[in-house]
Image (cartoon, rainbow, N blue to C red; front, side):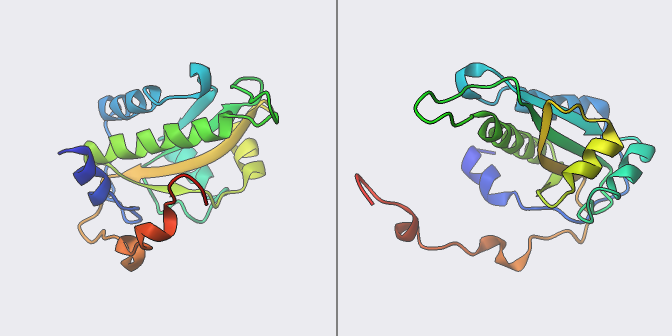
Length: 172
């Protein structure tokens, strides 16, 4: 499928089959994330793959939005890495992680794996449950798996503001 169709068909999956994602598929998804561009290609992202029953159970201590997914990936960045804009000190690492997360999400969809990007998680609980070092900052959680037969996009999924409300040419 071409990129437009892939992006158009993807939706946030919140109902998953009780079926493990094979390691070779996980590795392919991670390869998509590895291809993501980052500021000066510094690659500050660190990805925690959560797949064992024990580790998935711990996820329930960190978020209500786990949707009983059989796989999750926590995308973090190393605070000591990443590009810094010299004009104002803005860091690219959080944006880099968002780009990586998007690549993971779209790559997974191409492989038949649904996901939901979760920002509603307790970072302190994540640190405690998964022994996340202080230099790593959690940014996004992707809960993932094969969509169940009754999985469907939320009704608002296909509602978009008019493009002319969002785009300006040459000045605002």
